[in-house]
Image (cartoon, rainbow, N blue to C red; front, side, top):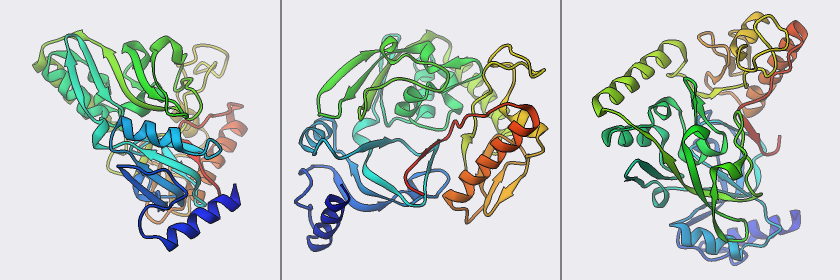
Length: 323
C-alpha cells in the first residue's frame, strides 16, 4: 500500500492532469490535499486524495473502478471531526453542490447528504413541516444520519425514513431507517458506503410558529455555547448508565459538561487548545492549535474525569488519520 501511495504521488507530480493510477472523473480529484481548511477546528494533515464528485453517477463510477484495496473516507463539512496532523491515507470523499438538494414531497422532506441541517430545517419550516431541531445542529444531513444527531430531546432516528447510499463497489442501494440500527450518536453502515440522500417524515406546523421556535432555540444555544469560537460541537458523549449521584441510572441524566466541570477542567489548556470556559464540553482552537494539542487535551480531560468520578468519557468528536 505504501509503495502504491508513493507511485500515485510520483505520477501526480509528473502529470498536471489526471494521474493515470486513478479512475477518470467528471468532478475534482486532488492529490495530497490538506484537510485543515475543510474542518471547523482548522487542524490536520493532507489526504492522499480528495474526491469531489459531480453527481451520484460520477461517484458510483469512481468507486466501481477504484482498486478495492484503497480506503475511502466520506466527510461532510467537518463540524465534528479532528484530522490528525499526519493526515489520512485514503481517498477522502466530500460531497458538494450535486448533493445538496432539498425537496418537499407532501409531508416528507428529501435532502441530499451535503445539504446543511440548518438549511433543511428552514426550508421545511417554510413549507409548514417541523424539522426544527435540525436548526441548531452544525453539520450536513449525511453527518446527521451517520451520528444520529439530535438536540432538545429529538433525534434523527425519530424522523428518518430511509437513506440512499453508494456502496464501496459503486452499487447504489436504499436502506430503511431500521437497517441502520440508530443509537445514541451512532449508526451501522456498510464499510466504505457513502450516504447521498435521506428522507424524513415530519409533522405539520404553522410556518411562523416553527420559525419562532427555531429563533428561540438559536438564542438558547448562543447563550450557553461558545458559538463564536472555533470548535467541533460537543466533545464527549453524555455518560451512559450514570445518574447525577454517580450511581447506575438514566443514561441521559448525567451530562458530560458537569463531570468535566466537577473535575476542574473547565478552561483547561494545552498549546492552542482549550476546554471552553463558557461550556466545558466544547474543545476549542484558540489559534495555532495542532490536532495533537486538541486530542491530548481531550485525553487529559478523560483522565481527570475518571480519577475524580470513575466515569470513562467517550469521544463524540470523530478523530481520524495518523499522528
